[in-house]
Amino acid sequence: GLFFIFFSEVSMPFINWDEVPPNELAPGARIRAPYGQNLMLSRVEIDESAVVPLHHHPHEQAGIVLSGRMELTIGDETRILEVGEAFIIPPNVPHSATAPVGPVVLLDIFSPIREDYVELANQYIPPVES
Image (tube, rainbow, N blue to C red; front, side):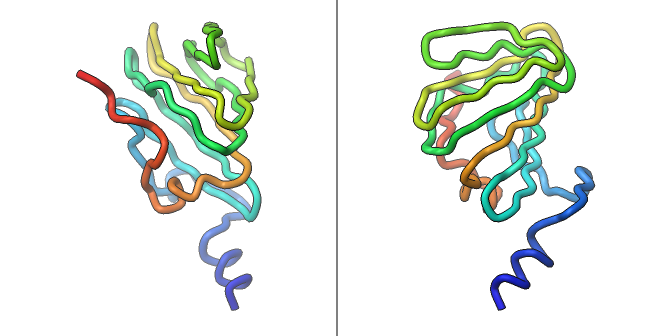
């Protein structure tokens, strides 16, 4: 049944990031997003000076910087986050991110899962304006 297919083919109890298909969110910003029934992990790589433009979604989002320094705007507040620093973004609050001084890797967590990311798509982040 569906339950068996979901947990045997989609979910990975132990995650090999190299086996998770990448999804480009914006030029220079890629994710790999394995997921379970109620939450999704997203390993985000942002190249130096790349931008994830301002967007919002109904999902709650939390994250932690794994490497580099990230400039994160949540609502009307902008901060530089260092390795180990974390954040929680409430549902529907606009946010954006960039890597001002070199590449950044972070781990995001979403609940509920981002259905668009499951399909290797992006429903909420607008195109970067040139």
